[in-house]
Length: 289
Image (cartoon, rainbow, N blue to C red; front, side):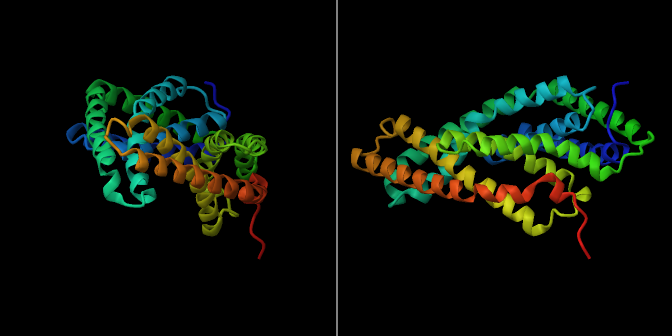
């Protein structure tokens, strides 16, 4: 058996897989019964966390029973992209509009399209795919359970830091390339994996306080704001004419989005230095008494 994962870590991740498997099943069943856009959005978030957990299991030293599972989760996640973008665009549009009534035709167009896409996603979630995903997650849970019963001499704190180090190294590498919104987006993707991993391994990270978690989430959210504005700007360009938006409203909206993008990009560049305080070695260090 190809297993080189710390027993304590395997036990913790096995329990995480069990809990996430149940949540994911409930989300999937709910969306199949009632394919509303909000339910699809929540399912996407849960699927994203499932993919992050599988990636963490692989990083921890267990690749057996994960390749096909990861591929299936990634395929499912890709199906949600357009629904997610429309969901975000509808939320953000009213936030940036000077007069919400002026952009209502565009919001209505997106709402109808989002509902149609949500139903399409639900149709693709067949009973067979649900059972197959559940089966693969159960197998992974069993493999982790067996690994948890093995002997282990290395301190689990060191094993956890070792799992997180490569993820943090990628975050550091991308943090040097935040001159553009695209660069910030690439940093956000890497940071998301690192933040999710830290959250999942929190019982072993005594330095990961509520305040640190809140700061990480705030930084992640700031980068997400920049990406959301970029997506919204592109959607406005594409659909404003279709929705019958007046040219003056269209141009004013694009100008405002451009100004906000510049402002948020500058804030991202100014706050990226705090990454140094979230190194795995610091988060895993025991608190001083």
